[in-house]
Image (cartoon, rainbow, N blue to C red; front, side):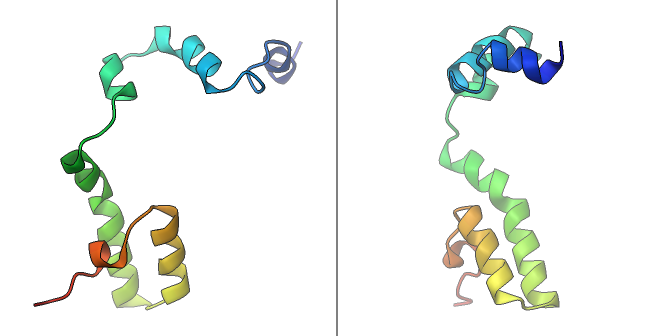
Amino acid sequence: MTVRRNVRENKLFWDGPELALSVTEPRLLVERDLVFRDLNQEEIASANEWRVQYLRRLAAEAGMAPYIQAYMDAWDLRPEDVFPDPD
């Protein structure tokens, strides 16, 4: 029996994420809250900082606007988050 067949028989794909979480949660090697709690605004900003720096570097080096916009859309970043006005 292959892994894929075993997964299908256990209906991991069709039962949704709750089943997948119930299977993996007992094996977590970190505190449960680090995986399941929502991030606060400070944590989100910190997590997005590398993305912002990457997009700024792309704009400075290549200036590929559609490529940069696609990343901002995928990462749910606003232009003012990435390129603030230099007032």
